[in-house]
Amino acid sequence: MEIIIIVLIILCIFGPLILTAFNMINLFKKKKIKEDVIDILTFVFGILLSTILYKVLDFKDYDDAIYIGVDTVVHAPIASWSMPTVIGILILGIISYILIKVRKTELPPLVIVFSMSGIMICSIFMVVLIIQLLQSLFTGFIIMYLIIFPINYILCSIRAIIETMKYYKKKEIIPKEYNNKILNKCNKILNNISAWPILAIIFTVPLSIILICILVLFGQRPDEAIQAFLETSDWTLSQKISPPPVEYDAHYLCTVSLRGHKELVKPTRIGIRHGKKIVVNRQLCIANAFEDVIQEKTPQIHHFIRDIYDKYGYPLSKHIKTAMQADITYIIMKPLEWIFLATLYLIDKKPENRIAMQYTGKKCEKT
Image (cartoon, rainbow, N blue to C red; front, side):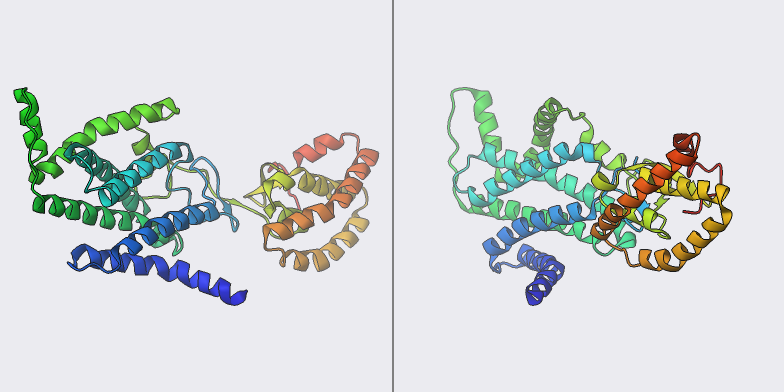
């Protein structure tokens, strides 16, 4: 099992780099090296790895604070609400590539030109994405891998367009004659293979308008492809400023447990501890309120409890490093939370007020 995991890790690290090298070679080499196999691996492996990587990194949008030690060091390079547009452009680019690559011998010139336009639209988007992700050169080795598929898409697309044009230049195309002079003129232009790149650039405008109209029906804005990069922070094209990073206090069991899954530990708000922002939930506030009231009523008992907690609780908390371990800690602390809450209701006149006041920055908290 360990050998399989090691092999998969090696493939994920070196596979994209090897495929990129082959795509660069095939772009310039007359005799291609396993061209079809390399293309299939590039698209299947590239899309799959990019999707998994983006999901694993669990990026947050610019308007969410990053939790230090838990989240990735940067925010999402693409706004999450723009993903339908991103997916739409990617689908257009892949379909256009497949048409040119697989069906080029059966397509009429007009379809080929429109396919080239689709490739150009997607390639422009990929170039902008690469520019956006250039910041990853300074933020992380793993994040940098998101650049690889866009580069490979551009390499494969350039090669596909060049090969298609070469194929049709060798093939004698007999223009169809129409009674209408305008149709004859248009047909003549379409059958001029050298003019295809220019026509493809011109056709990107109507094709983009059609794509935008479709995406607007799904709630996207007309300029969503641009805003997808601008409505971000931490990246090359970002124009938004994110909230300051938030720390998860790692000193005690209640605070460490907040590193667990949000659905379970239910973080409620941002609190202040020693002048720093931390995440708090009800369990943490109850525990701190309990210590607060014990310190007021029986300082000696509080001192004894604190000594024991500092001696055993703090060393134990340093070993809680994963979300699952934090979840277990949260669950184990639940009975104590109920005891603390019952105690507060028995000896404090306004227990909920005391709980609500915890970590508000108005007093010094210790839990």
